[in-house]
Structure formats: C-alpha cells, structure tokens
Length: 343
View 1 (tube, rainbow, N blue to C red):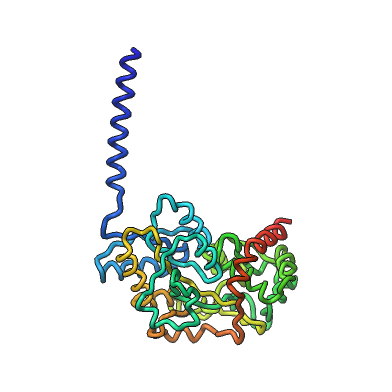
View 2 (view 1 turned 90 degrees about the horizontal axis):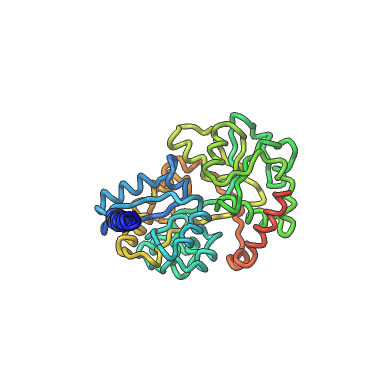
C-alpha cells in the first residue's frame, strides 16, 4: 500500500509540474503586447483608457493589456511590491505631488521622448524625464447647481467648515488617492502649520471620506451630497457627454492647488521600444481623448480643445509647494492626518 501511494504521489507531482509549466507558458504575455498600469478613473467607464488603447492598437498593431491598479498611490505601491516579479511596462497617472516617492522607488527609467518639444517647460516636473506630463489641472470643489444655489456657495476652504455645509461635502482619503493627497497639500498651502485644524473641523462636517475619486464623484452625481472634491475642469465632461451645465466649479479667492499627471517607462520592462511608442502616442494622438474624458488640460500645445472647456474656470491664483518640502514632510503630514481623523 505504501509503495502504491508513493507511486501515485509521484505521478501526481509530475502531472502537476507539467500542468504548471504549461499554464505558465500559456499565460506568458505575447511578444507584441505590453502591460500598462493606470489608475481606476483612467480605466473606468468615464475614463479615456479603453478608447486610447483601441486607437493605439489599431494604429500600431501592438496589443495593450490595460490593468486598473487602484488609485495612483495604490498603483505605485503595487508596482513596488512587484519589483522582484515585474509585470508593468508603463505606468500612467503618477502626479507631481507623488514624484519624489516615485523616484525613490527606482521603478522608472528616463525617456527623452521627442514629443517633449511640444510640451511647455513649466509642466515638466522631472528634469530626468522619468515621468512625462500628459495632463494637468487644479483641484477644486464641484457643486450640483440643482441642489445648491450660487448664493449659498462657500468662497474658501474655511467656509466649508461652516455647520450649514454639514453632510453636504464629500472628501477623499489622502492615503489612498492622489486627489485626496492634493487636498491635503492644498490645506498645507493655505493654512500652513494650522492645516490640521481644518481637517479636525471637516471630520464631523463632511458626509464621508472615500478611498478614491471615482467613488466620491459617483456618490456626488448620484445626489448623495451637493459638493465634492474634484478639479476645476470637471464640468467639461458633463457639457461634452451629457449636454448639461448642472455641475459647476467653485473658485476660491485664496487660490487652488495645481496637479500634473505623468506617465513613466518601467525600468524592468523587456519591451521598451513598444512601451516608448505607447508613451509617445499618449502624448500626441491620445491627448484630446484624455483631456475630454479626464476633464483635464492636455500638456501638448498642439492639441485643440473643444468649446466645452469654456466651462472650466481658471483660478486667479495657482498654489504649489516645493517638491523637496513634500518629500521631507509628507509621511509626517499623513501620520498627523490619520491621528486627527481617527479621533
């Protein structure tokens, strides 16, 4: 009996090994396919991801395995955890706020794309071109004009802490979302060292704090609250695709924090020529689709914007912090934020 069982186990082990080998071979990515990580909103129903991928595949014959990898912070974390077994060739959506974290991860390789000649210098936040800018905008709060009148709108971040806005504002977690992180930095820019007082007040005033922009904006458009964190350009989407001006931007006199989103070539990619071709496409042919779906400004100066962008008001003041200041203090700010919000 023992001898019989030994033979059976050996046969099973051999069979499983062969099966595993076959599975690995069958699951290998095609030599003409690249894997692209992008944040959820880029890949989602509202995002430009699938349209961009389809257009690229039709133009080049290269297949793209587009993977929704969470929000930008989650996506970067995922790529870091996979360093010993890399999967992505390109990563889309690392913002300038997160740039130093991205550089320190040593995930990205410099790529001096020829398209950079068409991108203004003030948008090039990485002098080594590990992250190339593909869109940009300003963080803002967007409101539902059918639920709240202009006369009742806040005129500053401080106004949002007024009890009259209780349960009317949706915020986003800065630990899991680049948009939420943008607001955290925005409050630092406006309030300085007193920024936690604002968050302490908003902890009870806000309806909720979601993990990402998609869930926050979905709740907003579903009517769960009339104000949400987003971008000055968010109304563009609704004008272009829904033919409505119902959702509009609130402009604060104190200014709005800026954000630039970048795309990076993964250093461990074995298909860098194809990956570079995709990045160049993202910075040229895909610019209008990205700007329209993301409701962000394109970085390529040759892109002609539709008239719907007239519904994206530009702030009088654009705020920003030094990248070195963010790198040095971000972990501390997030720890402080977590402590305050968990009270």
